[in-house]
Image (tube, rainbow, N blue to C red; front, side):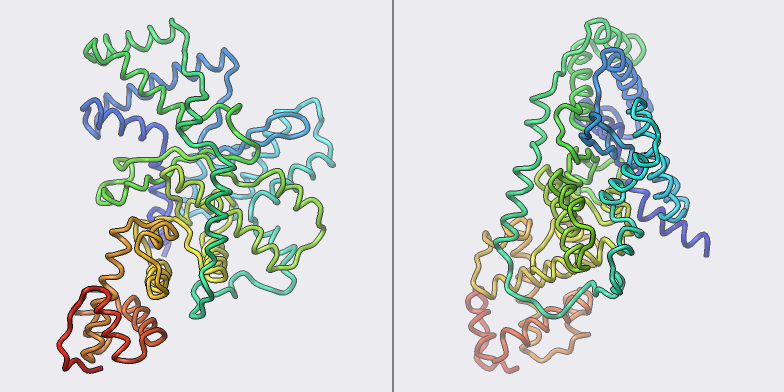
Length: 458
């Protein structure tokens, strides 16, 4: 049983341990400078360059926010809280429960607060205040119990059969909010000072030449490339807004390379907004919440994080999202499932964009939107899918529709199309709801350019 649990934890959290700045830099060296993907030399180059730049910036008082750290502006000054560390991920991989890790994270953040502002003193009032902020920021179990008023998060179904009209206004608002809150990666890097001391630069270039045997012509470009990647993934604190967190996420292009180990896949540097000052103020103004109101509040925050990451070419899974909000993936999934079904929207994550996991809802919505008369391009914009992906789902639906028209049973349709029965069943439900007559089915298929013999029967 213990081994089974560890295997499950490693499957869920193992990829996260490989999404690091260092692996992103090694990926750069392997794709641009022809070093081997498993090169020991590449790893040594990355470690040397990062250490030299860390030491220089420490001396100069330059402050960067690392992936997994939360940047906050407080009345005492800027605060960086280490929410997620490699050690936390390793504990989760070894099967330790999130509850224990979360308690240690809260304690660590409290200590970080007092180290950052020692003049304020470790009064009980201030300790309670920073803990209150942390519990407001994170979707912790204790915070939910406080407001749940007889409801239970586990009573919320992940999937529902009833759908309302697509909330196009909400989908547009999510995109606009993400654009207004965060800077793009290119804008953020253009605002960074990438200049380094001449002695540091010379030291690194000498290392590349004498120790790593890199040809003279590419020593300086290699150094500048690695420094730029480092700046992408570890932004200056001065470029961030309060409540933002840098992350190393799966790149949207990973869908083409999913057969590779995570460390060899392209990675995306993203900055997401965990909570805004306005949201913190909203939490502070109210002493109690209706359960559905609190659900909507936290679901909106999670939705924003997913959309912000997607606009920076990144995808965040529910397993990763739980480290942003310190809640279980089950709780994250149920809240976002509730939110997507309530508003009939699609949120970008590996399940919806890359078809990873058992995410069937987006296929359902794509077909529904098409049946309502939307074009492939319109559906593509609303569902974060490439037009060819939208058309691929419609082709599967066409195939199901044709076989259903010839009275093939569900199991046989699944066998013929080599698709799961649950997906076929979902498509058949759509047929029953929207194309009830043989004539309607024939008209739909003709609109898709499919010609059928006149003797077709249902």
